[in-house]
Image 1 (tube, rainbow, N blue to C red):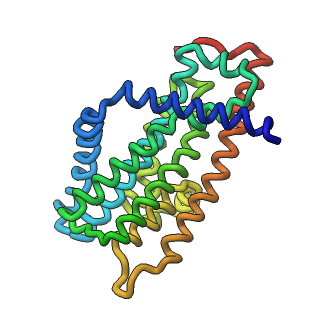
Image 2: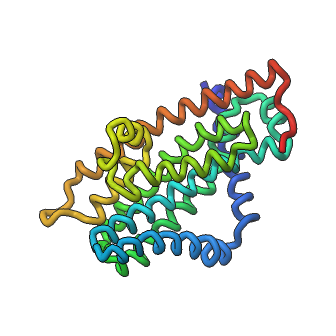
Length: 272
């Protein structure tokens, strides 16, 4: 049992270390704080200002919260193109030949985006939020950070499925990531309520963890006069985690199938 789980856990640990090495090559603390975070917060402000143009405080709050939380999901979706780096650099054949499963490598491969997404969304919600009428208590702020962590992890599980698919279609890596981002913004309650859409679109939205994580954060951001009803926060987050577990299992299956088919057909090679 120890050997059965020892190798996957070691692969996950080493892959996570590699992800952090990638992060600090791409960003310094200063360039992340001023460059990346500044750019993303400006995007959140841009969408929130639509509510100001409509002269609607409710629309302003709705758009601000939705787009601030979307930042976390957006960064988790960056694992779709970053997963393909292994194949572009020619290291995927070595990973397939290694005496361990392929899925732990890719589960850890892009985790650098998760804390980045949580921190960036936190800056938007807590530093900029009061300017748009979104205020927090210490308790709701801490609970919201926890909910953002759930949003990051669960969206990452969904993004891993897309990443596994684009490993076999490298030219689509950015297209798939961008389409997924736009689709989530449209149907998950970021720009308009989920109830705005036809029933079949609402059903599709329920399969995306962001829908439930964002719903929980909206409760925290706008508690009723009698106080926060804990069940309205906990239940959506638990639902998001349950859905994410299904996406993670599907991602693991697709990655192992990719490795199996690649060994059999000899189709794992360098790719641009």
